[in-house]
Length: 353
Image (cartoon, rainbow, N blue to C red; front, side):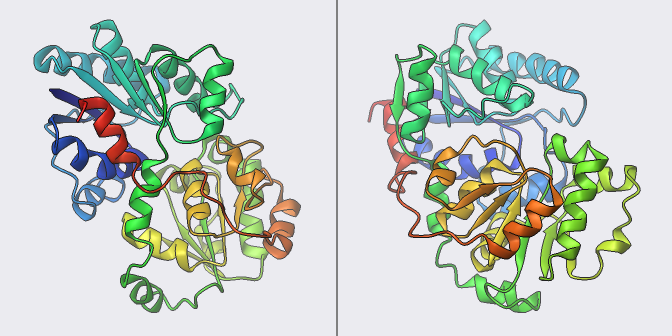
């Protein structure tokens, strides 16, 4: 059996790192990298540190508007699929790479497997939400990470091929949960465990709005705590365009370049709280029992909110500052994301052994 896996962004590299070894134990995998995240900090370093096999095809699509980027990906992925003729195309998550891979496969009548199926933020202004819905409705195998994801699909009439498997990101996170590297990372950065915040910002709703971006940056600067801020390339560009000077972030906010996955897990596990607009980071914070303050009005991971470990504050400065000061979850984070064997489960369902 031949499986073509389509990846293009940091969260997809992480998912592939968990799933690719399990597939390759059972079948031939062709790895296609669209190039959606294309620089060394957001792409190459993840392949190296997570020991992901070198892509069989690196399409080098790069950035662009949603339509232009997706169109170029669609044409390039289609060309590869026509050459390779896999038995299944595997796509991950909700990016333009996900949509392009699924559409290319569907139009060539190749079955599609969707890892992380059934997520819904119920906000159609998010490009990712459109991608999720379309991909779920053209997929043959839908690998849902949680019971809520399964229920979302059921409400939309999608029942065939749906499998509750757990979350492959949880699989990988557990490998790094007790990393001996953690203390070294914190010591090198002069950090004291649980005394600092970890912040990430990259969503268009925040980076493309000067008002939102300014409110978030001011909240981080005024929170009275050390903040570690890995700056996404999109965010760096947005800060420059909005004329929000980096010099204003040189006090309690320590800017660093994007880091590899093991280093990020160390920073996350050592943080007192996380401030983010990332779907994946919300979930990763929950895995490690780190209180999460989400800079959005909705989430595709309602499990984390319902469990009391994630609070949605949008880009409102007062709410961000209030949550940094007062948000303290009660109880323990439960096991909504599986048992750490989702990747093995998915691979067996795909290959049948």
